[in-house]
Amino acid sequence: MTEASGNALLRVESLEARYGGAVRALGGVDLHVGAGEIVVLVGGNGAGKTTLLRAVSNLLPAQRGQVTGGRITYAGQDVGRSRTDALVRRGLVGVLEGRHCFRALTVEENLVTGGLGRGASRAELRTDLERVYTLFPRLRQKRAIAAGLVSGGEQQMAAIGRALMGRPKLLVLDEPSMGLAPKIVEEIYRSLTTLNREAGLTLLVAEQNVRLALRHAHRAVVLENGRSVLEGTAASLRSRDDVKTFYLGAGVAPRPGALALA
Amino acid sequence: MNPDFAFLVEVIVGGLLSGVMYALVAIGFVLIYKTSGVLNFAQGAMVLFAALTFVSLLERGLPFVGALAATLAVMVVLGLAVERAVLRPLVNQPPITLFMATLGVSYVIEGAAQLAWGTQVHGLDLGIDDTPFEIGGVLVSRFDLFAAGVAGLMVAALTAFFRYTHTGLAFRAVADDPFAALNAGLRLPRIWSAVWIAAGLVALVAGLLWGARLGVQFSLSLVVLKALPVLVLGGFDSIAGAILAGLIVGAVEKLSEVYLGPFIGGGIEGWIAYVAALAFLLVRPSGLLGLRSVERV
Image (cartoon, rainbow over all chains, first blue to last red; front, side, top):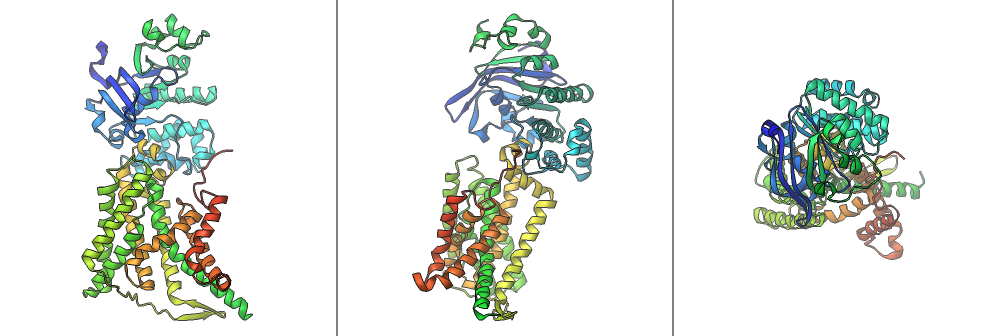
């Protein structure tokens, strides 16, 4: 796609995906994420963001979907040939849309499950828990409460914390802002960008809130109708008139294919 | 104590103790249902297989402990084999497909047991005297009390396992949200293997107790039919529910046999549990303790 993609941590090439063998969800997505980058995936409902992120973690088979064309490589290896837990062990960890906390488990148990896949020892788990609690101090107060009973923002923090317990190199987040108060969203994005700056954590984030996304990301990829139609630095996209019109709320709802034609 | 009242208590106690035996079988179902959404119809066949293997090894001259250890090993292998050969290839298929697969497995296991050990009925003596003894005017079966003790120990062990071990935590996570568990990097195949081994062990315990009670024969695999109303009543996904429902079903069966039987005719014991389960379904479809999702209101 671009010159910089030579040593990408994650690379998606002409990806196509279907559900149930018939419903086409993705029809040609190209993108790459370099180590240390924050890349956002923007696009409206049904653009294919969630499907793409699930394909990246090789989760589509569990949803009766499959990749039908193109390929995804993480750190040079084909994602389609690795089970999700193997990808997690190699540092590709996802945070699902809608948080998906284990509701009957306590917040701390939720966090611990994130470290079990890589067979972390109890000592390692303690260290990592401490790190997550430092990042999200609210979670420390709620550690013994069932995750289903804490607020939406705290659930999102628990979901992100659980992913961090897997010691990710690339964290893939699906709409971390969904249904949350702006103040909480700000807190979560601040934590994520801090991790990116200080620990070199690479981020791929799907986000409907384009204004928010472009403010925190280095680069953005626009998805429409299952295709990647536009890619560029966050600054360049912010200044484009069509992006402003369609995604930054100039009063017009994005028409399907609008950017592809632009 | 008033003799009528003493008799009532005796009936209830007898019912509760036999209910423990139902719960034993039901727990095997719950373990697998919770983690993989499969209603394992083969649980009854596994109970039979365990009892038959144990008896046959005893009859071939193995000492009690040796036969127990060997049967344990066989059940572990059986559980692993079913999970690996049948259920893992069918992962992500609709529940009805999985259920049909376990139905098939159940007949294969029964056939295999027949091939390996023959078809005759065996007696199984665990060395527990079944003479009733008296506590405060109430007669209690020594064997039933022993069975209840064993079941209690097993439940305590399972509970401790789920509460305090990492594998137990992973099990609870998968039971809570399988997709999130997959996404979090938990190794689902490993957890399924562990659960099938656990179900095999539960089948062993149930097989020995039921076998000692009824004799080891092919109708033993029909104890699943006793477990179904217990599952409906308790909820398919709750171990505590299975125990509670087992006790209720046991008591209801005995009480109706003794007090309703003379009016309706005998044999109530065989079907009253289903009537109770059906009636209960109408009121609370998810069972007594089933699937209470934890949510803020």
